[in-house]
Image (cartoon, rainbow, N blue to C red):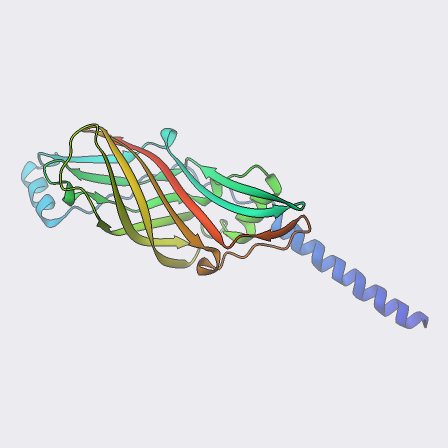
Length: 240
């Protein structure tokens, strides 16, 4: 083979290796760190609640309890299956960096409202540091989009009455935003009233990666990743 041809082929190969190396360095670079503590976005009260609150001046009206998620007792998770080194593996990512506010109307539970649920995506962790870096730098792009949010818009099968100790199941519909994409999803929710000022709950839904353009980078050890992603939220909310 002519020396010139060999030189051109070698140059192309080196350029290709440089591109691959640069791409790998970009994906596996240290991800952005959390910007710090964050607080729940206040729930806007209904017109009736706002009027009653104005009448009370500073305190919520009788029967209205404002709760916030307790991070130390709560956890957000995603669950996805993949083929790693030829074997099935279930990948779980977790964080307790969650914030949300709930307004409970004890006298009329159907007036209960839940505010925007924020999950700090920069703090999600799996059992692999390299996976975490790929997830945060490329899949979720947490450097630009620090938070995943869910904005509830309606409830179905919501209880009309109940007492302390009861467990309620219902559906919560809302807008889930991951990066720059928002889709409507429905969570199945189970909540137990541990007291008048404390709730313990679990919410879950399943999304499709394609709906949020969540592209998995090509990795030699990973032969395939499922399209479905399960999202779960274990939470405790109590009056502040």
